Image 1 (cartoon, helix red, strand yellow):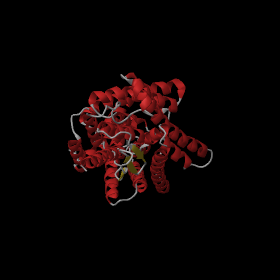
Image 2 (cartoon, helix red, strand yellow):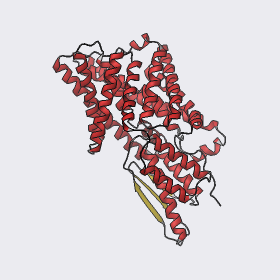
Image 3 (cartoon, helix red, strand yellow):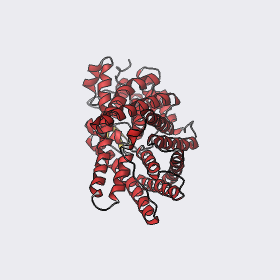
Amino acid sequence: MAEDRTVNATMDLCLRIGEMLLSSGAGAADVTATMQSVARHLGLRNPVIDVTFTSLSMGFTGAADEPPVALFRQVVQRDIDYEDLSRVDQLVRDILSDEVDLTDARATIARIGSSGHHRRRGLVTAGYGVMCAGVALMLGGNGAVMAVAAVAAVCIDRLQLRMGRRRLPNFYQQVAGAAVATLLAVAAASFDIGIDPSQAITANIIMLLSGIGFMGALQDCLSGYYVTGSARMTEALLATAGIIAGVSGGLAVADVAGVSIGEIDPGGADLMTVSVMALGAAICAAAFAFSAYAPKRVLAPIALIAGGAMAISQVIESSGLGRTWSVAMAAFFIGLVSYGVSGWVSVPPLVVVVSAIVPMLPGLSIYRGLSLLGEAGAQTAAGILAIVTAASVAIALASGVILGEYVAQPLRREARRMERRLSGPRLVGPLRARAARR
């Protein structure tokens, strides 16, 4: 009977760890490998683990004459929470190094799931405002544009927080957020205070895109978890569709009100210095990580990596390779560098890579596509092309980061064993499963 309770406690611990990782954006391959590592280390050999978009299941059979044991757990919360993700990742490493036993580990995972954050929610909202101001700076906006983008970001965050408490689906939250961003920019432009509203709208589009799990969706598809990847991709497409609907509605209101909102010239970025764009990207990435409850020790490395990636992207794009290839190579740099940096600051690589690619999200392409589709005539084809470019940029960012992880991880010791055991790059969890304790 005592052994049965130990088996149930071990499986419950693994499921709780998997739930925390999956709800924080970790890939299904990382969740499965982490659960297997913990179960094997605690004495459960060859458990059956199944990870889907909304549920986790784990089964174990001891001797041939013993009945099998199966446990299930639902995944409900899907907020970006890098503090909990880092704490769970550290707990897994402590378990595999025998620093905590099963009882202490269960108490720790329960405490992580039930406790709040040390960072106040008002500071998180302010972080989103700083993030959008950084994007506006990256796009060449002046102080007025940065102020409007920051105010809109604060309003969007508070509105979506209130809508979330009323359990409204994420699609409607994205529609409302995009509409608020567009209408505030239109209102600011009507006062003729010398701002470019298109820059403020684009900055808030990037803020809304930052909460979409493109990374986990593409990682699941590349690592063979097609059902989970398809579900995550559907969620990402619905969220993006909400942004498009909200911005389109705001632009229609601006047209009725007679407020002219121009489009950002894609060649305008060449007139700006790379250092200013890198500074804006660094501010944006660090502020997003702060708003996602990332530990403070990782903010400076994220800012440096994001600034360097933006500089690489601009240099490559100016050479004539195009937007998609430039962001893909910059994302490859992020994946290659972030793996070592994450070990240095003791956080999962997912925290670094997602934050660092936020400044390069295709907010500008989405805005250009919507503004061109609103015009009649030959501009419709150009608008469709801009939307397709936005999709290709998103795929290039995710695939470039994952390829960088593929290249970086085998540089570690015992890489050959790790490659035989894992089906994809590890963005969360330990690389090596230790043997079971005696």
